[in-house]
Amino acid sequence: MELRRFWFPAAVVLLLVFVLAGCIPVEKAPIYFSIVEYNSGPAVEGVKVTVFDAETGKRLGWGTSDECGVAQVEIPVTDLAKRVNVRFEKSGYALSEVRSLKAEDALESPYEVMVREAILNDDPSTQELPEIDVEFLDLDDTPLDPSATITDDFKVKISVTSENHVSIIYAALGKVPGSSFMTGERGYESDATSAEFEISISGFSSETALHVVVYDYNDNRVDQLFYLNILAEEPATDVVMYEPLRWSEYGYTNLDAYTRRGGVEFYSFDKIAEKLGKRVPRNFGNARSPLAAPKDCNLWVEVWWIDWATAQYYGWIDSDVVEPDGYNIYRSFDGEKYEKIGFVSESYAAYNGVYRDKSALLEPGEKVYYAVSAVYGTEESTPATLGSVVLLGAFNVDLMEPYEGQTGVSRNPVFKWKPTVELTSEEGTVTYEYILWIYDLVQSENHIIPGYVDASGLNAFVFSSEGAETMAATFTGNETEPTLGYDWFVYSGGWYYYPEKKLEPNKTYSWAVDLAYAYVQDDDSSAWSIAVDQGWGVDYFGVDADDFVEFTTGDE
Image (tube, rainbow, N blue to C red; front, side, top):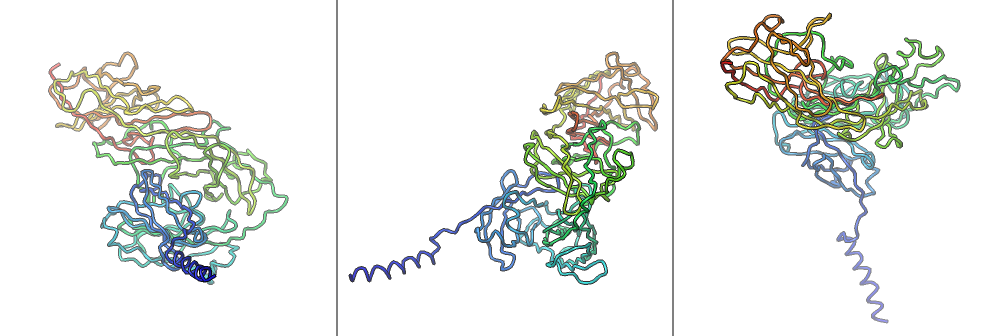
């Protein structure tokens, strides 16, 4: 009896000791973050990711990004419903932080974050992030309670306090804003500490996050979220909805995937030509000199559909079909389970419906499917499936002959090159295409190319192969090449037929492949891998060549 009386209170005390010592495990759940260097850019490995309670500042967990740029952070299950601040740190890189994120939003799919190389100071421990204050107003400048239900368009006034100069202020509803080329509609202000934007709620309903993103001149970055309860109007019961038409029904592609070897670090790019042609332009501008190549890659998919305005203009739909608020974009990796990845308003899409998917989930060799629906308040049309596309990998060009520094080269040399990677796709045969360029810049400013003349004028000759073949181009001087039929032209203040049978003796030249890309196309999609584009317009921005080989001719 005495033993029992002693044992019971002792057990209680012992249990309390275990609890206080933390020996009873706390149930945890992983949340995920996908870290890239820039929009559509490469993953960043080795980033320390720390999650804090946004209200108390208590650290909830931490992790490190792997070689795929994905960081898994385990936090207590009881904290999943909380707002969290998440800090991203790596030596050599700018600081990045996401503020007031609902932890559960990173539970099933990784939350994508940019961590950029530092510009001014590469020690993140010395950096202070910008502080952001946001005031919500209705369109009459009356203060608006962001926690209340929002039923109409509104304004935000943003003020930023920062130790470094502020570079860019963005704001967007329902997405993380960035350059207009990649993210479309958003508010944008540069080199200012304040900004005011009107925010349209068209196409949104229920809880939607407003993102305010600020960069300073070290590329430190803050993505601050405000969760808004938006109440959209119910559409009329008799509304005739527009069901998006597909460009593939009219001989064009619905999906264009791009892999480009030269990485563009997208900030703001507002003057981009929309949907460039995919063949060499029929014109020749000023001669170009070799430039150093940027590193890394970009990868994205352009999703195209026929918007309501275009369909109305061409009479492809009846006049009683009602203009939608915009379009929901859906993506699938198996062709069955689709998830919404974006929204584009009709006013933005009019006559040029496109959405660029820059997700870090995209990877070469993987098939991805898309669909689009028209949105009417709280309702949407039946989604139109747009097909699938397989993204191509990256490649470069190996300049084989003449090789760097070679002397005694024939004055009628055979230029040989090949792609460094054999690309394949289950959606068709991959075709490689190239343009060759010879630089005669020693004691002259001449440029020599193979080409041909037709009714449109001078055209560069495009060398083409199905698959990764070794290519060859014989310099035939003032004679037409007998097999492929190209001539040689020289630029010397203007374009002329090359006048001599051979290159000059004992002279140093450079040569390079001036344009190199691979593509595959089927009925609904195309995929492009661009290795070099010295201004030909296949790539939106141009991709400089890595190699320019010098060689010296002999006597013959």
